[in-house]
Image (cartoon, rainbow, N blue to C red; front, side):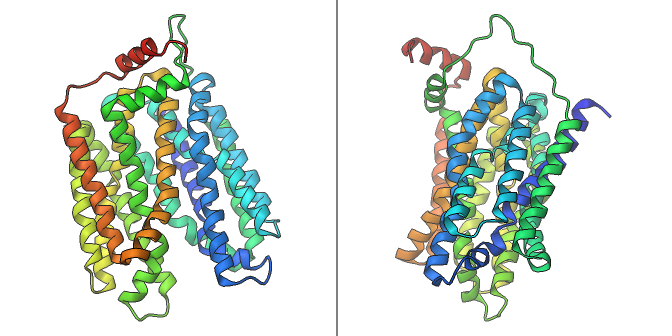
Length: 411
């Protein structure tokens, strides 16, 4: 087995463990808060939203910082710091007895919630540009599988062993991921040349904002998460409208997971098509498909229709992350790739934060079904923006970096 293949398999397994553990709290978050005292439903729901979102807030800030450190010192140390940090904070969550402590532990965990994006950057750095889409699409299967099965395992652990033990067992799973990364991963150190240029953080940020394609890709990354998370808090209510069944929570979970299944089945294929046909072409096609599959979700009259449309939506969305990551892999110079991918991850976490809030506000004013229409419109805007970007002259990201440095030499 080649070193590259061994690294890939280890990261794939580790991503499954990490993403599963991060999402395992979802089924019993409100129930765990209720064990801290006699609270009203409104109090529990408010804190559940704050505690769930806290991780994304600090992760949004830290992602580019971890990327910059990884560019300088290598990806393996960052993977270890992130895995051990997540393991520690999840372990401590099993012993909290009030919502404030729980909130701050979730906030602190966000500081080290960079394992998945760092692993993407690590594998991307060791992958040839012409096959980045297929490789990153395959890697995504690990994190998506974890996201699908994490809540199920979390619920089973909580029911079988209690909430505290669910956190402890999950912490051990992450520690195992750190262990196999420590002894299994071998990172090829990139030889630093004397002529290698070090760009400042402000230069990189301005260059991303000035590079039409790069900025488009990062906005699309945020849209993916807004599209996924805007309906998530409302899905159980929407399912309840469509069916009179008592198992609304289970059916809502099943409906939400349908998108993950579609994602899992086709992520690798879309990445491969991007390698063969061109990333921009496939990205445009996927955005159009996403737009087409979102709108009918607002018009369904029964649950089976919604499940099928969520599956089709997941099939389309499944290609967006590997394709957007592959574009950044192609455009960004190797020595700043980790940091640029970190900014892309920040856009992703921004979508995680904005999505539930956006969905709640829109549904509050014009109804749950309207969330699908507004989200579809955002994807349509992305299609139009990408179309006009492709019509304009191609920009070389390295040229943009040098131009920005000349314009702002002391920043």
